[in-house]
Image (cartoon, rainbow, N blue to C red; front, side):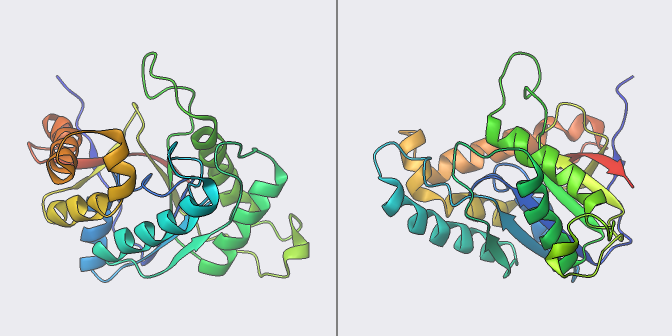
Length: 240
């Protein structure tokens, strides 16, 4: 029998999503975020880079502001108004204390109960290799959840510690434990991904909206068997 996924915890008010690039959240999490926004929960986004190295035909100096604009529009489509950027260099993010410090600072400022990030493991499952940026940011986010609560780590930030992170939820993992019904937020998740039109038009010759709809229907539909037949956004949840 296929093991069923647990519903995501609902006894929280604030979440912070930390990922490497514009579009990382839209390739999977946006339907969940739309539903949470509908419920009156606060979700903020923290982007470690501006995705400036993501489009081969556009120089980084031109690409960064373009992708920032698309990310802000993408977040707005699912009810997120707070979008911050750390300005680490796209493609060469380094895991270490500098990255942990920046993420811990954001956790202390936003004081989330739920922290969200993207797959921190070497692969997406099997032999599909993950990128160094995703691995570095995912791992640093998991570590920063603890850093933020320890007043003796990064005291130079001058911010009160926040030990209120109760869960870190990792999206894009091949080991999901929990899920959120994607149906209420699905259409807005399509619009959210479609907001990254410049990036998508480089990826595929397919009609951009058809591409977004097909991709998201596929990923959310694949989880339905393990979530009572409902299309779902899946997470691997690490309680704290």
